[in-house]
Amino acid sequence: MTPLLPGAVIDGQQVTLGVMGGGQLGRMFVHAAQAMGYATAVLDPDPASPAGLVSHHHIATAYEDPQGLAQLAACSAAITTEFENVPAPALAALASTRPVAPGAAAVAIAQDRAQEKAHFDRCGVPCAPYAVIETAEELAAISADLLPGILKTARMGYDGKGQVRVATQQALQEAWGALGQVPCVLEKMLPLASECSVIVARGADGAMVNFPVQHNLHRDGILAVTQVIDGLVDPALAAALVAAARAIAQGVDYVGVLCVEFFVLQDGRWVVNEMAPRPHNSGHYTLDACDQSQFDLQVRTLAGLPLVAPRQHSPAIMLNLLGDVWFGADGTEKSPPWDQVLALPGVHLHLYGKLAARRGRKMGHLNLIAATADEVRANALRAAAILGIEAF
Ligand code: ATP
Ligand code: MG
Image 1 (cartoon, rainbow, N blue to C red):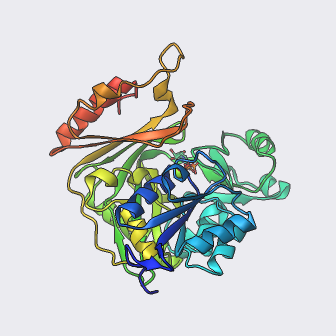
Image 2: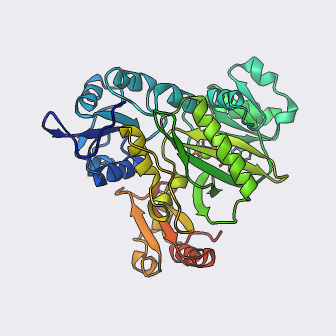
Image 3: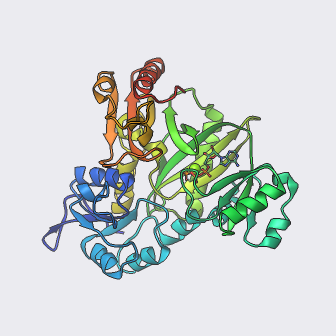
């Protein structure tokens, strides 16, 4: 691919990068693209979508609307995605006229837990023991070894939605019914010591770079805290997780930014959990703690620009700002005390421009950086206390 050089003018227009989806990931992609001199186009049906609000062009149609897709393709020189549930036919339609990264094949794998696990198997990366359940017969044949387990819908799950923890065959039957008997994956419940993720960026020429391993804390199935601090993840483990993430990207000839999530088990072993074909919430610290962010790398992979290994310059902690932070102990909505938070050193506030706060809704994140691990931890705990976020 000929690189789409920043600031190039095509047919009298600034070269434009397009994105399917207008959520916060799209918004941060748009910011990164614009900082480098690209114009941007967002396709998202919501007229107030976080990315649509800040983009040069916002096409507010359904994701599968042929006219909307044609409009996006007409104004964009290359197109990426910011959420994994982009309808496959929409991506295929775009790819018939424009470079699309990541490609439809990689996105299709990430959209389906059964396909995803088959891909991990092919790449020689271990995952939790599991079984695919599509029929009542398959359900009846489940081995007791997989219980207690977590029943997860094969498609459309996120932030712990579409998942039920089951301890018995009876509970499994009921859970499958409650999920509408859609295709599911039953995973054995594993004793976790910690959760980690690795973000890689891979170019069309096969060049690949990665960020350091992120240490993630989830609460109620939603990412709460990411810490990237030297010494927090054992170096041998970190090297193994990076190698696994790279193999997973290589295995689908991936182009773009890919996040791979892992479980570290109490006995020291590890397994892969899932992959996201896009920048990831656990990579938001890169905006302030690294010389290039995950969104900068998304721009580079999409535009065919050189990939240079990113360097983390400061220990970092990211606190997710869920809508809960907007509600007082008495349940009334309030504006969080940002003035107190911003009085702390090394704080970077990112809000996504969402008008309504709801519990569990991702409203923004707070990055903290400092010269030392002790300092960043102390300040992050202070910020958490001010915001009513549980200590970690
Ligand atoms: P995401 O928003 O990351 O896509 P998701 O809805 O796809 O989330 P998972 O990542 O599958 O959900 O699971 C959410 C969380 O539930 C995990 O981060 C982990 O804490 C817990 N969990 C999931 N599967 C298992 C398992 N097999 N054993 C133990 N804990 C698990
Ligand atoms: Mg997950």
